[in-house]
Length: 295
Image (cartoon, rainbow, N blue to C red; front, side, top):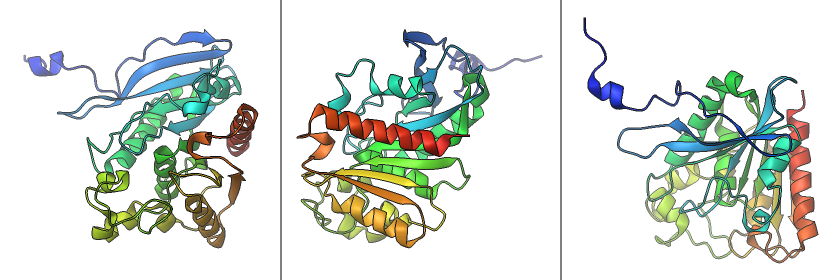
């Protein structure tokens, strides 16, 4: 009788069946699980996620989910960072969302130095698959998910909301996200091979027009898309406001609910606006997520 090969015994358990770490209580009424692997491919680092869960137990039934996607120009960034204007908050933004009754999963995805498009979008899909698979253990209802992303994460969150076919996406909160990788907007030029967009695609967008269209949320708009809340500053010097304006208009033409909130005087990352305005943006975004996932 032979057992598993030594190589199989040495390897860590697959994320689909690996034991979950015990939650830690770091804020009143909020449990945290940090660094939980959700994907492991040979030859690459494990992709992990952090979870903020409401309450001490899922007594009220599984919690709806916010799937948060970080920014960083597809080049850098940390999964647990909602942007520079929230880094000093205590409790932090994810603990606040969990305290309001929604679970939050902040996910790794492969950056452009690790994998080109559609690699990072595939990672988000796999994270949602894993959260669905392990949802009963976590007390999470991934069938009621709002995707929430900022900057490059807003771009990926938009694509996930527009291309996911299983109906789990209840809405999308997009903060100053790129929607069009095909045309000049603001300082972006599709002929430049050194832009973050070019590094994501593997070439200057103008030289790979089909790939650029496929990576543009604007080209993936469809009837029946989930509701979007698009929030963007009118003074954004990094991702032009027209990205959100064009996406909102396209969604409306397709008959999909879309709300565009233009923040006067706000640059990228909410730079240039008062703390109270950032709090208001967050509160309105959270309320949108709560409405979209209410039973």
